[in-house]
Image (cartoon, rainbow, N blue to C red; front, side, top):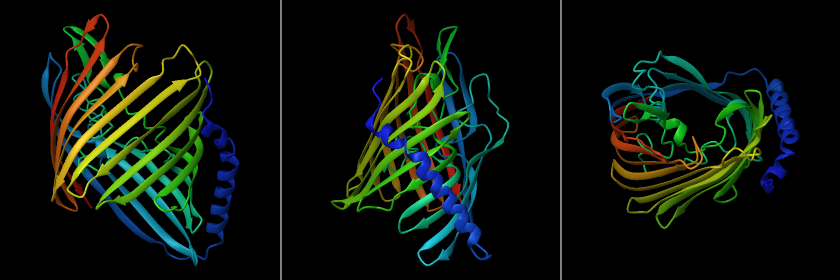
Length: 363
C-alpha cells in the first residue's frame, strides 16, 4: 500500500514532541511553588432505550456513551508572562454503558475509566501536552454543529454497539462489528503539539503508545464564522504500528459541519481505514446529517453506512432522528429513534430498532 505523504512528515514527530515534553517538565520544575486555581466540572447522562431486534423487545436503563457520565479537574497557572502550565484530569464513570448492553447483558457493573491525565504548557507558540489524552486527530470524524450530538452523531455505535443482528434463530454479528465512524485512535499516552490559530486554521501532531503499539497522528482543522452562521471542519490521519501480519493500520478521514444563520445545518463525515496486509479488506464509512435549530430546540435526521467491516461485501446502514431541548446551559432533555440494518450475501438479517429518551445534567 502506498504510504500517504502526511505519514512521511510524521516520522520526525517523535523527536519534536519528545523535546516538547522535556521542555514542559523542566518548565514546571522551575516554576515557584504556587497554588493552581482548580475547577471541578462534569455531567451525568442517563438514557432509557427500548430495543427491538426482530425477536425480542426490551427496555434498558443506560449511561449514554454519546457523552458518558464523567467528572474532571482542570487548572492553569502563569509560569511567566505569556506562558501558562496546566493540568487536565478527567475520569468517566459508567453504569450500564449504552455501547455494552445487549439482549443477553442487561446490566453492566459500574466502572471508572481513564479519559485524560495530562499536563501542558500554553504559550504564543501553541500548546504542548504530555500524558493520557486525545490523539491529534481524535474527534476529527465528529465535527458537528447540529446541537443534537447528545442523541445522534457520527458515532453511530455509541448507543447499541453490543446488540446482535439476527436472522430468525440465527444470531449474527453485533452492530459494533458491522459499522463504526473510524474516528482514529482516541485517547492514549502521548505527546501532542497544537499550533496557535492561523486565522480560521490550526493543526496538531501527536506520537504515543496505545497498548503495545506506537501511534502517530496529525490533523488540520478550520473553524470560522460564515454569512452570519458558522463552518467547522477537520481532516485527520492516524497510523497504528501493529506489527506482525497486520503491519501498519492507516486511517484517513474527516468531517465538515455548516450551520446557517437561520439554524439550518448540514454535517458530513467520510473515512477509510486500511492495512498493510492485502488479505484484510479496506473499511469505509460515510455519514450525513441534516438539522435545524430554533431557540433552545434542535432536531436532526441522519444516515450512515459502513462497508466491509465484519466481512468483505458487507454493507451496514443506519438511519435515525434526534431532538434536543437545551432547557438551560446545564440541562439537556433529548429523545430519538434509529434503525440498524445489515446487507450480507446469502443471509437476511432483521433490522434492530431503537427508541430513546434521556437527560444530561452538567455541573
